[in-house]
Image (cartoon, rainbow, N blue to C red; front, top):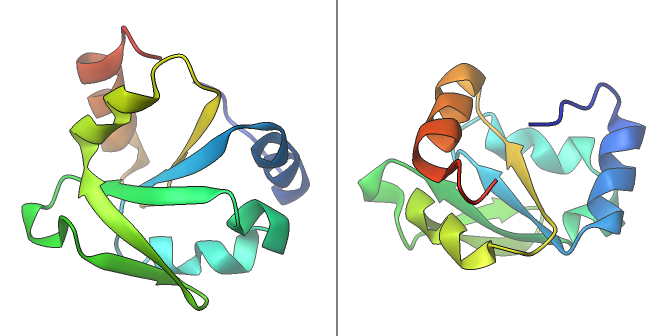
Length: 106
């Protein structure tokens, strides 16, 4: 896990990556568009969430519709330089879920 303290550094890391997956598709996630630069926002691939009622629906960041997938979809990015951006206030729960279920992929 890498923790980034400034929005400038976050944008820099995102721009150097293959893409971003936002983990968590609630009210907090809707604010991500105000934090990221336009170029960094364009690198968001999709959202993942553990709420089954959100699967395959859209989250909008600005005018861009991004689909919400199950967390298990993260496995398809093994070996790629993907930023997983935790976009929920429940950061400890998300981090734990990643460590337990996907330790082999991180």
